[in-house]
Image (cartoon, rainbow, N blue to C red):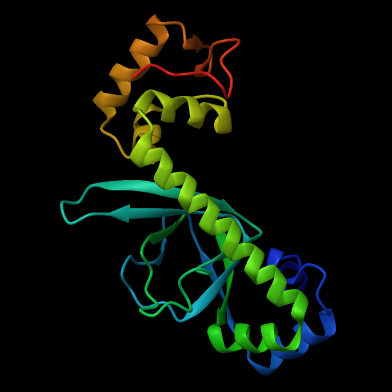
Length: 214
C-alpha cells in the first residue's frame, strides 16, 4: 500500500524517505469500500485528505428538494477533499460514493501540513492538484450555467464516446430523463447524433467547434 501511496499525484517526484517517515510518524488509516458504499456525506466535517489508491468514486450533490446530480467521477490514483480540508468551514460540499470496490488512505490535515513543510515538491504537487480541481469546477459551472442541454450532451460524448444508458447520463448531467430523451431524439433528427449498436454517438464531423442546437 505504501507503493500505491507513493504513486499518488501528490507525491510524484518527492523524497520517498521523507514521505515514508512522516506517514509513519503521523499515521493515517486504510479504508476499504464496496461499490455503492458511502465514503463521505455532503455537509459533514472534513478533517482529512483521502488518497484514492484503488477503484473509482462519484461526487454527487443534493439540494433541499432532493434533486441530485453527479459532479464528478474520479479514478485512482487521485486525491479527494484537497479543496475542502483547509477551508474556513472545512465541510464536504458533495457526497462521495464508491463507484467500484475501492481503497483509500485517509490522511489527516496535520500530516499533509507536515509533508508540505518538509518537502517543497509535495507543496508544488498539492498546489497543482488544487489548481486542476478548481479548473474542473469552473468548467463544470460554465457547463451548467451557460450551455444548453444539447451542448452538454455533445461535451459528454466528446469525453465518453457513447450514451448507453439515458437514465445514468441524465443523472450525471443533472436533468430529468424525459428531458434528455427529448433532446437526444431532436439531435438525432437534426443529424448531430446517430444511433449505433452500443448507444448514441456523435455523428461524423461533429467536433469541438460544433454549435449544438438549443
